[in-house]
Length: 364
Ligand code: NAI
Ligand code: MG
Image (cartoon, rainbow, N blue to C red; front, side):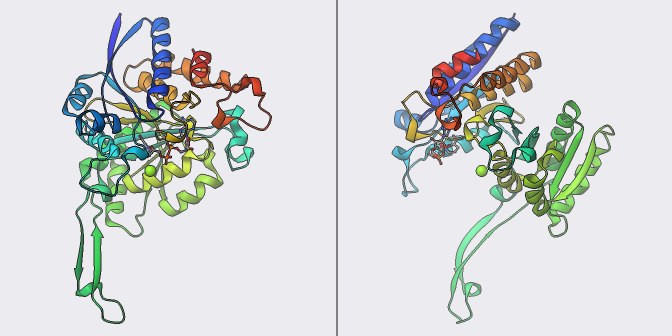
């Protein structure tokens, strides 16, 4: 019988409440498919700062490195908000673990659940049947380039006064583009066979290199259709005709912006999962934060966490049938009318508005 070691990182706010439901569902599919999971719970974020002064203690990173997968809930909260830049912040733990595990691919699936089609600000006929996957490069580009802020002559305005000046650099290496492109084509092969590669090749050199390398990788995947699209046009197409997209691959900052835009096609933060893959152990987490405003009340929506367990089964454990079971269970629970507070609708039966634990039980 397969046994997997999962490093669990509850973090802060609603984190401990929702991760418990993810574990419950993982154990349930494990029992059905003959796999067992052992859990190694560690500290990250604000909880880790309180206990050790460090948002990512070395033993947490080590446990994550040696685990078969990492399940993270969320970090952060007003308790640790500070303007004093010498003080550690919970979010530094998140960036450090992504970097420490070499997680250069961020996957964000966006699919609409029929039962929630009026949760979006877009018309149902535009978003019905949307099922796309954003593949965002996560460790390169503008967020990791050389940067500086300084005071000099060139900062001068029209009045000749000196002023502040700052720059960030957008840089990509061929191998960084190649490996993320390969992830996207592999993904398209098992999905619907189409990749949109997003760039700004009419202006940026990094984008021209991006396009060249993506086309070279595409030649290895004749069964996958490749479409180049400029990022500004993509921003428009995503809300106008979202069904045209299957896999969308792009660099770090474009992906940051487009994935937030795309996530709102479904209209509900509590439903969106993500996976970060790379050289080391893969990490799975909901897209939302620690929701401190509702923490400790047992009312948080655990479905994004549960759907990140679905991704874990698919990408780390090669248990696609078990993953499909979870996706189906979530859709059925919603079809039957069950809702947590964040996704309840005007016509929801008040007796079917449930808390975190009950929602997890229903999925099980
Ligand atoms: P948030 O995602 O935590 O909350 C935004 C709104 O959505 C809140 O009203 C919250 O109650 C609601 N919400 C979020 N998840 C929910 C769920 N599962 N069920 C029901 N309602 C849910 O974002 P916010 O408020 O901007 O940030 C709160 C804290 O979380 C901050 O400290 C922030 O830095 C951190 N954060 C952490 C992330 C992570 O761990 N990956 C990502 C985003 C924010
Ligand atoms: Mg973002």
